[in-house]
Image (cartoon, rainbow, N blue to C red; front, side, top):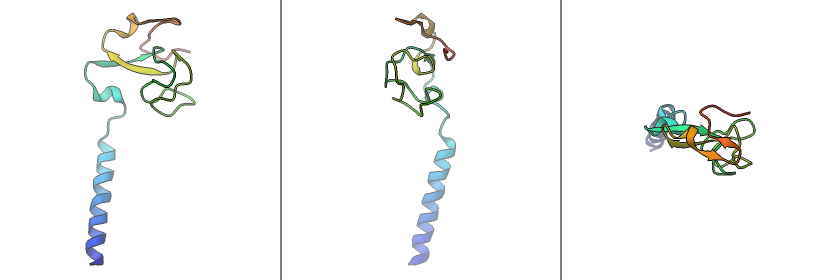
Length: 93
């Protein structure tokens, strides 16, 4: 009975580890036709990894934070106007 539980646990651990390896690096990799647009997200509404001091989605501290990005339809980022200027395909400082 113990070897069965150990086998199940090992199989489950391998499955979880395998799934973690195949996860794309960012949300942009998951959605074709989308691109990262910096400086357009509202506070707490950014998509994953907003830069130094943030860890993932929803962690931006200010509206239109230059290092926080939001996924937008490809080709539209630099046309999005905010009170701080237009969106950017690269982080703003």
